[in-house]
Amino acid sequence: MDRHGPLCVGLDPHAHLLAAWGLPDTPEGLRSFSATVLEAVRGECAAIKPQSAFFERHGAAGVAVLEEVLAASRERGLLTVLDAKRGDIGSTMGAYAQAYLSDGAPLAADSVTLSPYLGYGSLRPAVDLARQTGRGVWVLGLTSNPEGAGVQLVGSPTVAARVLAEVAQDDAGLEPFGDVGVVVGATLDPDDLAAAGVDLAGAGAPVLAPGVGAQGAGAEDLARTFAGLTERVLVPVSRGVLAAGPAPADLRRQARELTAELRAALRR
Ligand SMILES: O=c1ccn([C@@H]2O[C@H](COP(=O)(O)O)[C@@H](O)[C@H]2O)c(=O)[nH]1
Image (cartoon, rainbow, N blue to C red; front, top):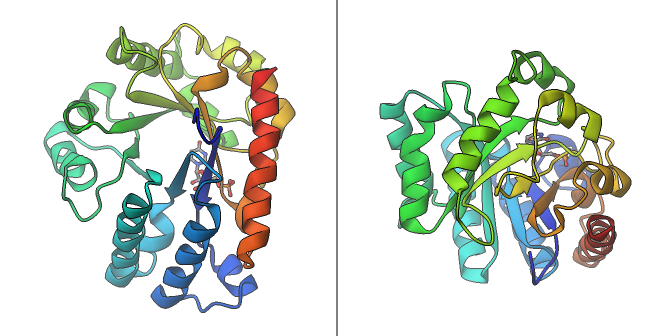
């Protein structure tokens, strides 16, 4: 992020994007789409975030393309956030951890998104393995979708505040910030965070802030919601970059312009 800025390009091969790019909605279409994005945005973003669902949709052949994307990213030195939102009882969580966070696993990524709704403690095998192998995890805190509030803002302290407190405990003492990140939507405003009792400034966690672009949030919202967290916020944007394709030069330009806009917003 120091070198490339706060943009993380989301790799979400929606059927409508494949069609707009003149590609078939097949594993071959995914392969071509992904290769174009990787080549176009390398050097223009801090990381890429493949959304597992769009690959799983095509069954084993789609998952094979996801494996290729992760391997190709590693070869190009592009960091990956695998958006799989996994969460299960601890014993099963250990298997998910091996799938995404162990050296040499076919689906190994630099980091993976996790859902804490079976209890934060159930994520322990993933948190521990990530730490051992030099990787990271992103735990859902306050998600960007409007329905999230019905679960995440319940209770006093709220579920989201309790998740953040556990994340902060895992990150305590780690510099420049911890390897357990938290997902907080850019669609939220500072009042939402205050009402949820979520104090991002006080936690040492990096923040993954989806919602910019197609979900309606913009650079102004980022500046307001994440004021003072400048170097800790990674901003995944999928449709807001991918809609500029299929020409690699257009994708690259869009990524570069967004990076400049996000950098300026987060510096305020
Ligand atoms: O709270 C969350 C958590 C994850 N996402 C994921 O991010 C991308 C957003 O796509 P856009 O096209 O930039 O809207 C997508 O993969 C979501 O599953 C999120 O949006 N909100």
